[in-house]
Length: 528
Image (cartoon, rainbow, N blue to C red; front, side, top):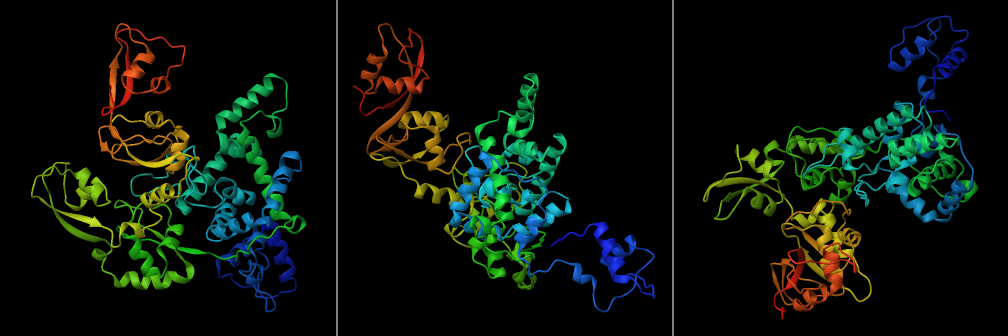
């Protein structure tokens, strides 16, 4: 079934429908005008058939529409067949992905068709994120389209404390379409090279092409030497396209998705609490977050965007309830008297808001506040734990579910000024990638003082400069003296030579000399 009738098809349809029609009438609807523009000499009403007979039926399974829009030639080789075999063996995985896609796929298909792009691209979020808008990779990529921060900003995706456009379904889909279109132009219409570039970057693909050209080799995707992940990435998409094209042949079950819009966009003109919005829509907050995953916290960004996506069947009720709610009640407020030692940063952190939001609410031109000053603070209408898909709560859930190797113990670490993930990993004798995994982070994510991390280690260390039952750990910049050796320094501070080597990026063959400064993390309660 062809859901996007091309001009030739329309002309043929018009000529076959209107042969013998003697009365020329004036087209009224946009669809009729488009048809009349193609066949201006013949246009008249038809009793038996109407324009709606050419429109796609909402009863049709959306997967049929997707496969009808495939444009990339199918490929069968060992690399593709490997993934066809894997996906077809994991029928339950594909069912789960189909269920997740139910919320988003119609919108993606509509946007791809509007830009005349192959509908194989609608399957790309399966490869990238399994259609999970909260997916976050070790490379700092986020959302169903897995934009890294820099590329997201380049394509206009706003990212701040309150909002991350990489997880916004509409904004990220629009950005992904522009990015993919640009890559396709860069590689002269070769979709396999464009897809490879989407994964590894255009520069890496061009470098591989230049390398092959210099050796007189072919420069198609299959001939290039690319990173392992990229070499698998394109075959995965081609495998999925083959499975969607012929699911019965591979014994695959794709959960039916109706061919009609899942959500409607509703624009507001001010900040709003997500719990209140979910209640107005008659939805569970967790389900509301899955449609509005771009919002990092308990409310929309005070500076916008303010829109919400709401299931079509609940949009009318949401608008009626919204109209009945005074604008000033879209956010809850509390009064706060500034105490000694307070700062806007501390107050904002304590109340799960941002410094800019406090300054805006209180008409402050600077960060200066004084003791006993009264502030009004925007606050969540529900306990923060209720906002289960806010950034803080997602991190806590990840930390609670984390687990270490056999024989390790879980401890909590509070980041101190001057810390880095490498330093913290060295103290606890674990890897940076492990800390990142336990805390729902990427290894290159920045950390800040006061941030709480979960660590699984055989000998959990205390926060240096803090007291605990296991001692007081402090960072020491030790100056090497005459007669010192690594073994002697280790013995003096109850450390191991391996500890010192890790903390100072040294190896067993490294020499130390008088006057040299080395970093130690010392339990001062155990120093000899």
